[in-house]
Amino acid sequence: MAFPHPRPQAPQLPQHLLRTIDCQQGAVRAVRFNADGNYLLSCGSDKSLKLWSVSRGTLLKTYSGHGYEVLDADGSYDNSLICSCSSDKTVILWDVATGQVTRKLRGHAGKVNCVQFNEEATVILSGSIDGTVRCWDTRSRKFEPIQILDEARDGVSSLKVAQHELLTGSVDGRVRRYDLRMGQMHVDFISSPITCVCFSQDGQCTLTSSLDSTVRLLDKSTGEMLGEYTGHKMKGYKLDCCLSSKDTHVLSCSEDGHVYCWDLVEGSLSLKLPVGKAVVQSLSFHPTETCLLTAMEGRVQVWGAEPEETEGEAMAT
Image 1: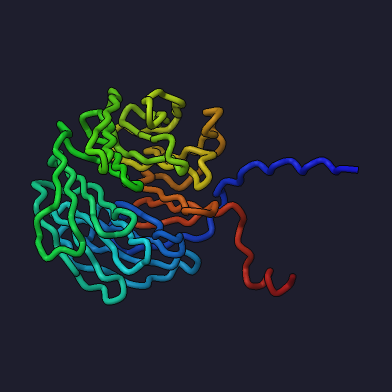
Image 2: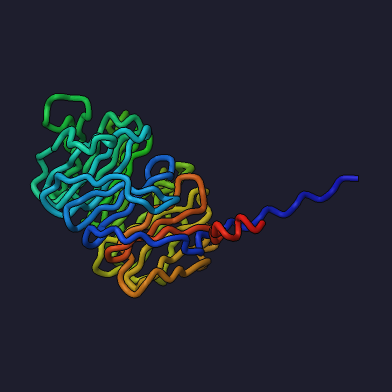
């Protein structure tokens, strides 16, 4: 006799606060998981970049070298390098272990909003208020960018790179997707300044948030709108959106102190996470697990699907 298959479990959501980290670096402008999700990077308004253990909440290293607030950062796939960008118009490549500046890359004409490595960490891509994306060779001794993409008509607020594709969002209301191998560009127009863009994990869709307090899911190849997610407030701040690690949920920061989490397919609100009373400035979803980072004012919060056992509980069981 065949037993019925167990019902697939509803995907869990990161609704339990596991720990709060007081970063002591002014306002935290961005928080990012590293490639394997064991560490996090916090970007501070006090010009510092900090590396933390996610599980313990302990500070591992502080990176000092920017001349103004740090706005974004990314870790390389092998955890040996970090890139960061700042209002000081520079991009810095750091050696993780020593904390030393490996390269300081100048060329943007205004503050640099977003930065990311390609998958091999051979190239850094940076997007700026000056309307350009600059591509920098991490191994070259030359300090000029290897390519400048200047199609945006206003500041570039967000970028993501996946394999040979680059996705950018601009204050001009356009999402641009570059096929770097073919040298082609696709443009989708959204009628409001864009604050954040990302690819879905399966690479079929793009997610964009904009200042009309709407997050949109688009089919990558056709530009067709697959979903609209609303209810949060995003009118004046550059805030993050993202997808959960299995593409089941859409998440967004909000100016009302919550993270909003919608069911991707149904578009219904699954969770409204109360982070605090101020603006939720940034968020980052773990690459494989149900774990979420949020940033508000000077603190980072780590959220998980289950409350963590305390040591006393663990010993009692």
